[in-house]
Amino acid sequence: GEDVEQSLFLSVREGDSSVINCTYTDSSSTYLYWYKQEPGAGLQLLTYIFSNMDMKQDQRLTVLLNKKDKHLSLRIADTQTGDSAIYFCAVLSGGSYIPTFGRGTSLIVHP
Amino acid sequence: DAGVIQSPRHEVTEMGQEVTLRCKPISGHDYLFWYRQTMMRGLELLIYFNNNVPIDDSGMPEDRFSAKMPNASFSTLKIQPSEPRDSAVYFCASSLYNSPLHFGNGTRLTVT
Image 1 (tube, each protein chain N blue to C red):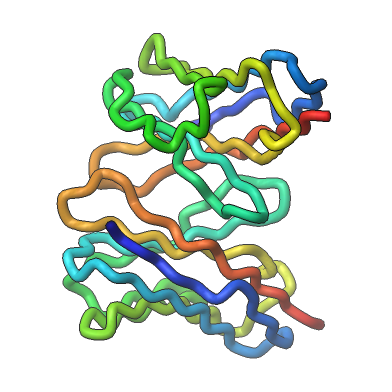
Image 2: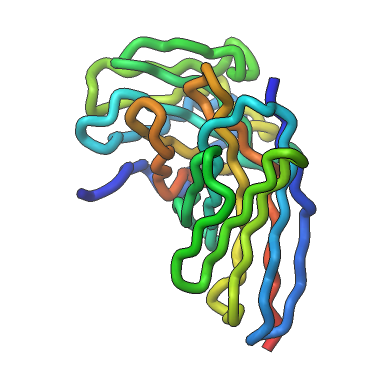
C-alpha cells in the first residue's frame, strides 16, 4: 500500500519562508492534500493538487509536486506565529477511496 | 454548513466503563471515517462507512471497539470496556467520493 513520509519538526523565524516536505511511494496517486491541525482542533484542509499539475499557488501557500521523485512540498511565504501547527500530507492513490496520511510535521515559528 | 460535529469534546472515564463517542457528518456526504490520534502512532484509520454500511473495519484495534451508523446523519464509536491505553483523540471525518475529507474537532478521551 501507499506509504507517506514527513519529517516530524520544522523550526523557522517569523517572516521567513517555511518549506514542509513529503514523499510518497505509489506512482498512481491522483490527489495530494495538505491539512493543518491547530492545538485542540481537527485537521483542516489547506490546499490540494491534482497529480496532473506541477504547482499550485494560493496566496502565501505554494504547493510543488515532483511526480518523478514522488515528492510534494508546501511552501508558506512570510511565515507568521499563527502558522504554528501540525501540517499533514495526505495522498489518494488510484483505485482507493481512502487517502493515506503522513505522521505530520510540527511547524514552530519563533518571533 | 456546520461541518462535522462530534460530541463530547472531552470524556474522562474510569477503566472498565463504557464510552460512546458521537458524530454527525456533513449533510450529503456518503463516506464517514473514524480515526484515532496518539503521539506514538499518529493518525490511525479505525473504520469507514459508505452509505451507512461499514466497508473496512480492519483498523479497529480489538473487539472492545464497535462502530455503528444507523442513518446518514449519525454515527457512534463505542468502547466497552475501556482501558487506559485507549486514551487518545478520536476524530470523525466525512466526504464525498474522491473528495477531501472534512474532520470534526475530535473527542479527547482519557481513561484513568
